[in-house]
Length: 200
Picture 1: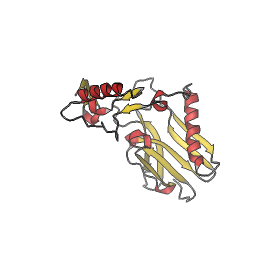
Picture 2: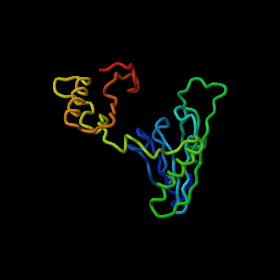
Picture 3: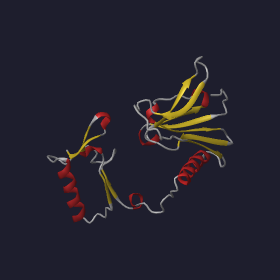
Picture 4: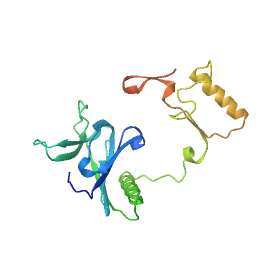
């Protein structure tokens, strides 16, 4: 990448696609933490933003930043994850490069990401919903940061805790529309993924 100090970057990576982890800085300092946990890369100047990402096969594709054989120039590329052991003959992987003018100061980068998302929605013929019950109404969550995240009522297991809370919320007429049960309630295997769909 260029030594041009007028170019910056933001790379979303980690869990929650950047909610917990992202890199930002001048483009010549760009690094890649983990090819398996990376997300879209935005390169921007004061006038324009370019976002690069996979556009298909999202769960089996990754991107990589590496130096050339001479160890000098950094190259950025996309492809199938290195851990994939076989690829079907008709498999396809695509990428997207979305360019947007940056107008309106700091909000320009956010709008560039919105434009990138809009292009992916057009590609897949989808629309943003006008209504989302998980955002518009009260939800009981057991996700990270919530009181019941890996926490039960005294002398109760997870199942009894959930049932007790349900009974209590109905008795108190708390108008929950949805419940989010996070990862504490199932047995985990390698990589903390689902091992079996049996309540703990």
